[in-house]
Length: 229
Image 1 (cartoon, rainbow, N blue to C red):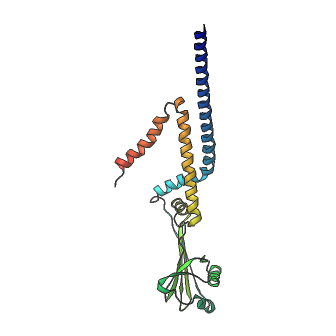
Image 2 (image 1 turned 180 degrees about the horizontal axis):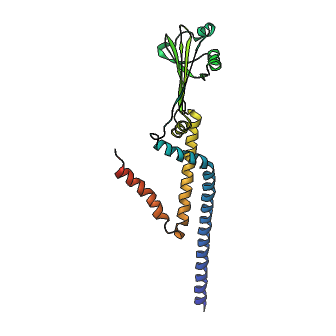
Image 3 (image 1 turned 135 degrees about the horizontal axis):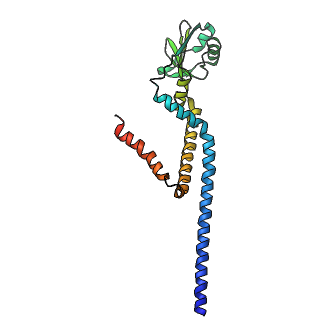
């Protein structure tokens, strides 16, 4: 009788341990599934609009040759007053770049609309040249250091070119540069948490890994065999 009781007690103890272990595994799985859902939701909401933007501009960039745009070029001329021309001073040694004096920059912004404040220019004995590349266009300004003649040219290639340059990070400045890095990290988290959710739900959704594998295999085959070098 004692041996039978001990055996029954041992079986019950093993069953309780197995139940506790299964419960802990279930709780742990539920915790990670909840975390994945929360972060998938947060990163999805945060990146939704920009992800749509990058997807749309991916199409426009892929069809750049078929999307025609007529650049709008505006040229303005003026003459820098003598008292401001004097402030340009001597050319920096060795062809170095330098920022235009604040009064000169303010006058240029007011008279010809040139946004040269805090921009560096290329100085020579005869000329000061300031390049102002920007998303979706270009601009430059030239000042004749002897006569004060000013030429400012601004080129606008349209909204699609502007969006395409935002996609590429072309001439967008440091703030957009850092934004792209942060957005990319959020998009990576969105994909990773999506993969975690796929893995957790895969046992109840048989086609999951077939579709994921196709998403990897199809572009890999196209890149490996159908893309001309």
